[in-house]
Image 1: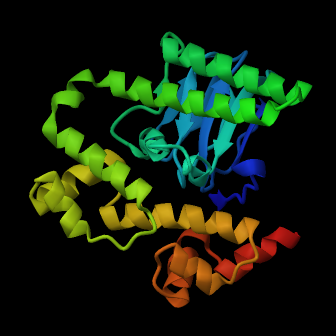
Image 2: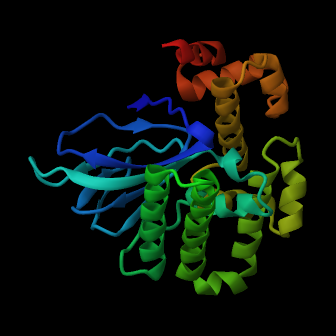
Length: 277
């Protein structure tokens, strides 16, 4: 398993790719990813199980989740559309961060079946985005970004409709509200105990249910979010590492370096130096 450093122009990219049958070592990255098989079935090996997606299915890949994708048969390459984006890309959109919640949930399948009208809409929007970039019509960048937001809205609506009773479950609503708050305030040094009190859940129950929903403890979840944003700053700016550490809520550059090494296997400075390779 290896970390892949992905450089995103404009903070996101939508492109058509070809998958092969060849097995690969799983990789992981800090971007959020949507994969759309276009003409053949594709395999998605994850740490806990393997999924098979039909053409038109939509497959979500969570940040830091080891994965790979490949075709089912040798000599049968598959076309697929890939949507990759950094969470910061929608930070300026009103309530934009709420669109990220499905990418941080582990209690639901990452596979949106082609039979869903949302899957059909996501594929149509992704193909429109590919065409916009290919033709480069006037203001295509604006339309391209608008299509990305529409894709994320359909992802969010699918998962909201997947568990319709959850909208009336006060515990679930409280937990999702806490996740939304943490995503929006990822850099703030808010008190998690205060956040728990806002959900009106007991602390033990909150931690248990939060981990069941996200696969992480609240502190791990916040660290992952901060690492995503910090990685983007290291890649795309020349700001001092200490300034990035403080802005991303790590408190000190030494603590930032410690956490960064745990997830990346290298220091922030070594990660930044990859820009020159």
